[in-house]
Image (cartoon, rainbow, N blue to C red):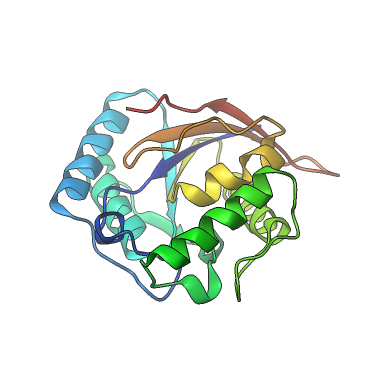
Length: 203
């Protein structure tokens, strides 16, 4: 068994402008986001959680959050995994208009209703999302050493995939910026298992 902490990045420009961001738009942390990352780093440093490696999404908001955390913990960022990117929204990427958000919300609603074939236009469907996040988490959990791993990535992708990854219902709230969920990962064949240990309450 391996333990993974999944931290959502701090607030970034896309959160303010409500810009869909998978690859086209890649905004920096805001001042608030940097403060959230610093506060998260302090919380992690104060806990006896034996974090041995930090892995992040390649998007700037996750990388910058990871840099603040690793500086405080005295660790390097072990890797950036492309599979940890936010939802692949395809042609909606970089948009912030109401029409784009209506399509986005419709796809997420379809997934929640059990329609795994629903797909973002030019982007991913539910099975593809779940496969890449599962692979990323198992890859991180399989790295040598028995210390806890910290993933710094995104919230919407994780919440959407959570029922398929863990077998639990939607938690009912997003992972807030700067918040952390925890998982237990079994990498034993034939099928790796992912168990949710904690999903923080909103606020």
